[in-house]
Each structure stands twice: as structure tokens, then as C-alpha cells.
Image (cartoon, rainbow, N blue to C red):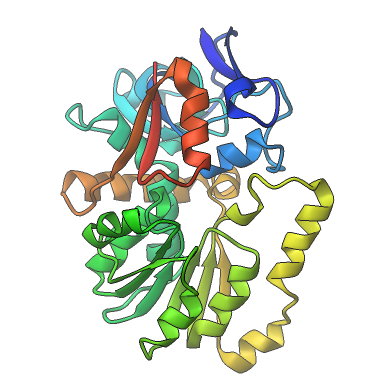
Length: 338
């Protein structure tokens, strides 16, 4: 089979090669999927830049979310998946014509659902669902902040939060994304490059019940200061580290920006911090992945969620797809098809 193999770090235009590699063999509880399309996530950008510690060593096949047909099963209990079109989460290996994954990380998807839409439901919509529907509870009239609200997870969070009746503040790096954000339910779009989002929120006269943060670094402390008593900060990324040189020193500087906090601060202020890492959840609690994936598929097929597509690329343009995602000019989900 063919795969887009990460062979060098850095420049996306030179990082990947299309190579012939063996088709993987599924083990117990796994299935083999023939892939029609796969999605990109910001963790892929981090891995390409050598900043994601969970990434496999090079040469590596990246990729967390795929759409395709189940062509091989191991256990009879997974017979219902054989021959079915599915959306699935993989633990890497998604940038290929075939990939294996835990059968519990698959959900049958309707033939009428475009592959790019289906791909958005895996990592990004599952992350949003876990963060907004399981890790915490959102309530009507809650004031919440969503960083990178025009991105894949940000789009999903905005749609979920609006269904709950929340008041949403969303950040982006360009005013050009404001109309898109408003369409997804953001009430107060904020350009973080030209505006101080903390001041913009404070000017509205409300503190936050929840802050959803994919940026990390210094934004974490600003979010914490904006939280109301009883508020929660949900962290699911450190995009501030992406694309920056400096190796271990830059990573330490990022950690320093987060600050040092004691549990006593959480108790005294009645505030909380929750981390969401779907890769590790998949490793240790696959039934959570199964639950989240089925939920977002059902919500999409019931028109409660509307995944947005930011760009569709062919396999030979995977470098361009990576560059587009890393530029932070994209909105919605970026996908690559075979």
C-alpha cells in the first residue's frame, strides 16, 4: 500500500514522501480499514516539527482520523463492522491507504455523509464532545471563552455550546473569520492579534464559567483570572509552542508561562482545571472514545451538528495541507483524500 511517510522535520513541503509500505495486520480487538480520506489535526503539525512527544520515531506515518471501509476483522463480535463505511480514530497510521484501529474506535457512517465531514467527527468533534459534554457541564446563559474558535475543535465547541444556550466569546487571528464564527454561534468574536481578549471580555461586565483553551502558555493564566468563582478551565492543546525554535529551552519557557499553581488555590477560589488528551483516553479507556464517537455521529446525522470543511487536498498536496493548517488561516476541518 501507499502511505505519506514523515521523513524529516520542519518544512511541510519537504517533510513527506509517498512510499510503498506493508499493509498492517490487525490484532485482537482491531479492524483493518481501507481509507478513502483522512483528517489533519494540529497535533500532526506539532509532530512534524518534532514537538509532540507521543509521536512515533521517524520515518513515521502520522494520522488520527480516517474514513473508509472495514475490510478485515479479528473478533466475531465485530462482524457488524465488516464491509461497513466507518469513521474511526487511529493511534497514528492514518496517512495511508490502509490503517488498523481498535474496533471500539469506529462508528458506522451513512454513505450520504461526505468523507471530509465524517473525518471531522473523529478527533476534533470527539474532543469537543468530551470537553463540553462529559468533562464539564454547560448551562444556559453561561459565559464561555473558546480559543481558536474558527478551527476544527473550536467550530465543534461553538456549535455544542450554542445548543446549550451559552454566551460565547471566541478568539481568532483574523477579522476575516468573524462571519464564520458568528454563523457557528460565537456572540463576541475577538481578534487576538489586535485586541486584548481579557479586556474585551471584562468590558462586557461578566466573568467566565468556562474557558476552552487549545493555545496554552500565557493564555492559561489570563483565562484563570477571567474565571468566575466555580469556573473551570479546560485545556486540550499547546498551539503556542508550534512552529517555534529553541528545543527544550522553548518548551521550558512555555511551561513557565503556564505558571505554578497549588491545589489550595483551586479550593480557595472554587476553580478547576481539566486536561483533555484524546490519544491517552483512547489508549486507556477506549469505551469513552466509542461513546463520544457514536454521540457526534448521531448528532450530525440528526442535523444538531454541522462540521465545516476548511480545505480538501489530494495526497500529493499533503505538504500544502500541512502548511495551510499551520498558517492558522484555515477554518474548520482540513482533509486529504486518496
